[in-house]
Length: 377
Image 1 (cartoon, rainbow, N blue to C red):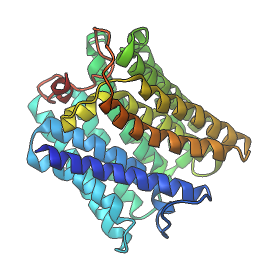
Image 2: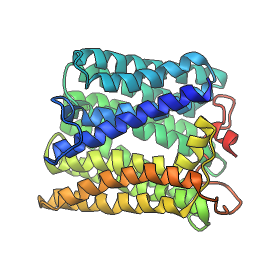
Image 3: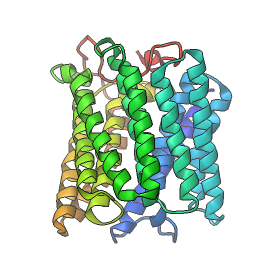
């Protein structure tokens, strides 16, 4: 698929992110550029499926190298935006469901190239996303929170396992697949017994965070310079937030309301997932769009801002203090700074990167998945 089409799909995901940030301001009771009846209700879907889902599925479609694969990111982006339109919400939900099912098909095609357990784990993660959308049509977002979280965590964990295979035990892929199956079981249990399923998921998240933090190549590259150090810092802080979410789920059981819900949602999807987006942006965006995006220290600004302001938000939510709004607005600003940082970095001279294993190379190099990161190097 040519670069303009990829750019349009990225733009659709970016538009979902901007709409999601606008919705966040509405939920905080603050002035927002756009106000609609549905916008606040769709905040989570816009950020998780509209933005993160579009980015993940686009990167996988690039790896697949088949035109039909691009229907997945297109459907996820369009479906999320349709939930804000005057059309029935069900229309957007059905388009989102189609996008998630297509993502399952993309992973199935990738798995057929090389029967890799890591790819199979990602396929199961996509099934969790499809199941979340299907159940959400009849319920609400908090009900499917474990399923949505499982999709994001499994997808990112699988990519990190792929990178660290040379330093991991030979059975690490099978271990990941078993863990993914357990996460799927926790998601299913959470639909019937939220407290039981939530605590199961919390334990699994804790194991995942500690295992990744111990074995990830970021543990070594944090001592490097330039891009490897930046990416390593983003990944290790992301694992720390995943552990925060795990402990909260174990302590609270169900995370349907109040401080527990606010903490797990933002620890997983902001502290963990957005930190990983920052870590991989200097590699993934050039590989997808084939544009120059050299590393520059300006990228540290949104990374530091994201984690500091998220800590303020979580502390304020736990203390039920009004200053949590300061942290919440700060995380919105940090995400906007990320966009500004990417644009600025693309126009500034590149800084030298220490040679060695790059911490941001998350693309598999097996026959099952084409290495799009390799295109960027």
